[in-house]
Length: 257
Image 1 (cartoon, rainbow, N blue to C red):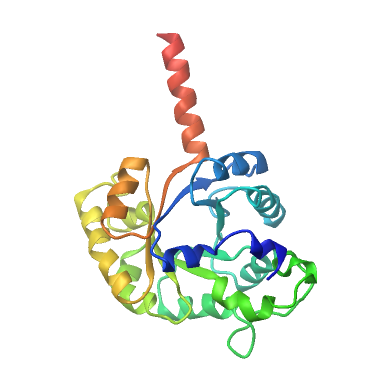
Image 2: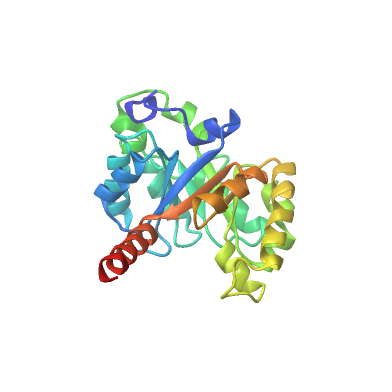
């Protein structure tokens, strides 16, 4: 086992052991902010490449900062991109989140990007951070058991196929994207509408019955606790920009009063 892998149980290993995972989202593109989140007591830091200007180098720097904390690193891609999945895995990012997956075929494409031939299309390299820069000898024996591939369900079309997508071999988790799902259901300005929350609540047991872990993104700890109690196994409860902006507004309002 390499030095990068020695530090902690894998994220997927934690969930397989029945431990629910609570995370914080990060869009500030800052290693300092990421490290602070990692030391907050959360189980994972969810670095966003879709709705922030993160690139490979900034993700690497944040992952290096989080490596000194108890937290795991999850990274959301900007889109389904097999090359980017390969690059992130080489950087030692074991937990990959792919947005806007709508079909079984797209889920299978994502799976193939995480696996070496003959089971997939990941190109083979040995000297990279994921392999501890070739310091160990067992990376290729262990990596398939450590990678956690999470696909996001964010549309009506995807919701209608959620059981088939969740059952794809190599898809480990299904994360509901409440904002985009709400928009596609006709509630762009009301993601907490009953039709949206009911659709998500109905999807959670279907995901789990198909053999995948169910996840959600929530706006606060109270909402996060609700989704965990409803059967989700991983939930992010806030984001760094969200918390910074909200706290800043509150402090200015308090001082102005």
